[in-house]
Length: 473
Figure 1: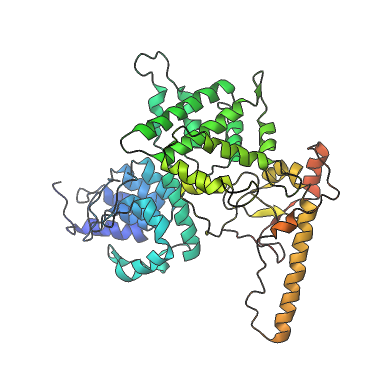
Figure 2: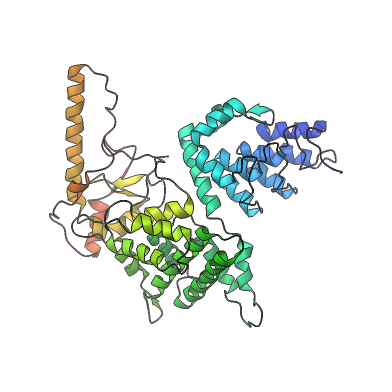
């Protein structure tokens, strides 16, 4: 087929666009096998079938189209949008990842000079409203009703897509180090380590405990020699990012940070035996006054301080944000680093696991109702330090409950609308968190783990009484 022109669609191609929105993968597959259908055909706005599928959140359709040769880099849309941009705007993390793996370029800009990540990050709901009024995508106007998720949740998904794009690292760039280069007789990275290392490099969760957990859970990585090879490769990638023509300070900082965590892991190997559990406990251990993990904060600050390129703008920004902050106060080094690297912002209403930092945690300690976890594994891991503060936090929670009930009665008595009756301040007063440790027992004995399962179980966020409520997606 010759040059593809906008809007010159065959009847079968028009039917394909309809099927992408309302039909099945089987129907689309049948149409794609027709000689009258070009997989990269363009509608009147320059949208390909892949763009339509990405915008409409059709993951299986996207995979089908890519298998049939869809061009993920097509840039013929009238406003310069790409399939990756539509995936990011749709808020579908899986489709965004599929586009990236298919070779989508992250630095391509649209007609107003924005990349896919920038569009999803800064557009927000304001852009959605603007888009609904002013923009047409193909034959349909963009509306909230076209989304499978509510606008607020959709905005959270967009920020997840931003993090995925900003943290993406093509596997082939890592595979380069699995082959001997120049006069080297051995590759710098054994091929068997490429997969596990790539998983860590592309993670959007930079919490040091999560990184150590990922290392500990993989037998190939849980070895001092293997970690040594991995961190040296990350140092090389960091150097390349800073010295290449299109300097990438964000990726360089991430590689350096992961390298520092790996090097810290190596120090917890004794005679070939892993002591990573001890490292995790060191990272989680809270100070006596308020439970703040001081060692974790110092590790992250030290990693940033050791970044070898002092002239880097990103390093200077991080130092300016962190240096004046006293350890234990906000913002923490982890929150500043995460925002700088992943692009995630703090106003998104979502909870994070206290242990590993995983987003979307929806369980909490059933005693104090104040500490959030992914699951019982993270809760048990954290119990050795949380049990020292659990009763104090319970007292804070109960005080909040009493004050909320009192306020509700006053509002009902005065006859004013009870606008906030189902909401209690989510942030416990900082000064009250550091109450003395009554009935706390130091250590991490088996008895403590039994207590974790019996006295400090996990409660579902939606089943818990009114108090410091957690969002559950």
